[in-house]
Image (cartoon, rainbow, N blue to C red):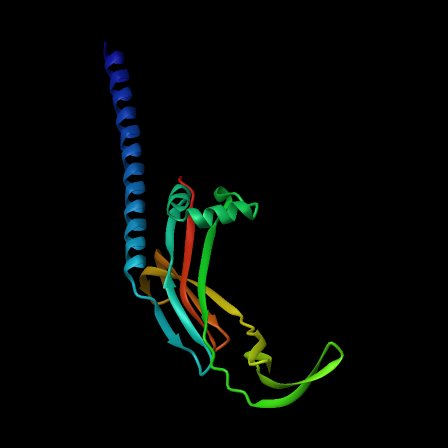
Length: 203
């Protein structure tokens, strides 16, 4: 009888330990989900921070969204379709970034007389040209029409930084979020919007 009671107590104890472990794991998962939703809410509500680095470079500081594979396919269906067309699987995706840029340049260039050959006949035209390290604009004005080629080279630099909840001297712990900072090296190109999404696999 005593042995039976001991066995029942051991089974009850093992069941209690298993239930506690399951509840602890579930609580940890819920806490992680809560932190993820809180970070995503803060990211969506936060204003994009713009910083002037120097006379030609502007930086854009944005936070990172964290989505599961299912959420990414639901809320970013267009991006997901593009990624599939590139031959990648969404399940293999670590992160996806999207940048919207706008080019705004005032063209100030002198007109010069020139000639072009059209059907073996020389035709007088006006030549216009603006060339600097950030823009190349070459065109001609003939028959009251401007025909031009514009080339605006731009390099985007992207830095990813981790934000920690707690800091003490040189110790950092508990990741709060991830920020990305994007800079354009061309003063005529402004990054209007940027988005960086970490795609998380369900554990």
